[in-house]
Amino acid sequence: MLPSSPGSLPARKTLRPSAAHGATAALPPLRSTKLLDQLRERIRYLHYSRRTEEAYVFWYRAFVRWHGLRHPAEMGGAEVEAFLSYLAADRGLAPSTHRQALSALLFLYGKVLGLSLPWMAEIGRPQTQRRLPVVLSVEEVQALFAQMAAVAAADGGSEHLLLAKLLYGAGLRISEALQLRVKDLDFEHQALIVRSGKGGKDRVVMLPQTLHAELRAQLADAHRLWAADAASGQSGVEMPHALECKYPRAGHSWAWFWVFPQDHLSTDPRSGVVRRHHLYDQTFQRAFKRAVVAASITKPATPHTLRHAFATHLLQAGYDIRTVQELLGHADVATTMIYTHVLKVGGAGVRSPLDALLPPGRLRETPGLTPSGRAV
Image 1 (spheres, rainbow, N blue to C red):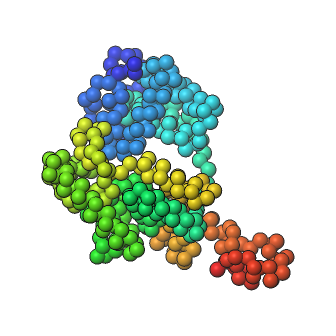
Image 2: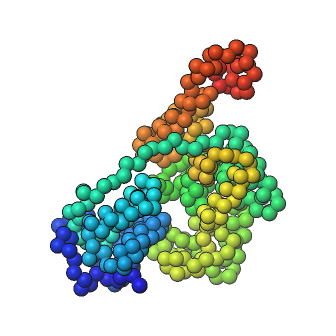
Image 3: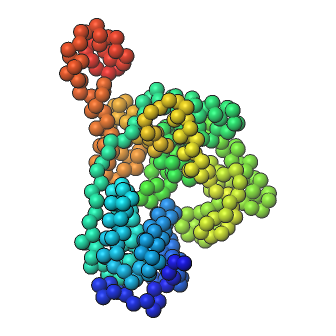
């Protein structure tokens, strides 16, 4: 059984109530009694994403269980450091996962328990090394789509193929594509509006012309589900933030319906309301993985790899990096610059000195190269 409210449990002397701490002092008092519920309440008050909530809850449970179900208010920096050392040394977690666990625990102490963290600066933070992204070639993307099209033809469903094309054709993250609403598609201006992307930012990207017919067909299928829900009295989808209170009927309208709805109703894990959810990312990821294997692609490709391919292929086509940055929704151009490193290697970059030793005729026989050794 996990601990509930800190209540009467004594806190260490190193943990002092941070009433003077600006970030915590401005937060309202918690209404929940159990600590796990308090964690969820604070996360939702600060409008953190559902994925962040799931991750923070996971690390809270792991931390408490690893310390024998002791209450976090009874522990401090030494216990946090010991748990993080266990994750790094015994579990061999990646630096990014290590930092996520640390962020979850600091949130627990600072935002939920309302305790000062004098030991926070002493906890070691692993340095995350930036890795080159996995990028598929144009031929590999075509082979991947061909395999997904074959599955769609056999099973009668084309949502996964259309999703994959959107990830590559517009540079979307998988969550952004799955959360598209009907109103976010602007066929007249050939624009697609991404609402509340990473960092809560909106942006506008291109709507590929080649997908117009497929998207209209997908909308027709979605409309049939929306009409069936309305007829059965089960209409309604999740609305962002307080819009559900401000516009109670908006969630039942066609404009707010999902472009990629799930084929069955489900229970909202937060509110307990039964309604229509969008497609699950795990379902698409499994279909994508099968297509990668079937296409004989040896690269460790994931759905996010299509976003990497989108950025790299645009840069290869001569588009400037600022344009690509805006399309990807990167706050810092340095994040987008990682794709230029991919272009600096192979046939599109510096020519190997070994190629200079080969006769010109051999270079003509090399697919994709001109006699000068440049990529075509």
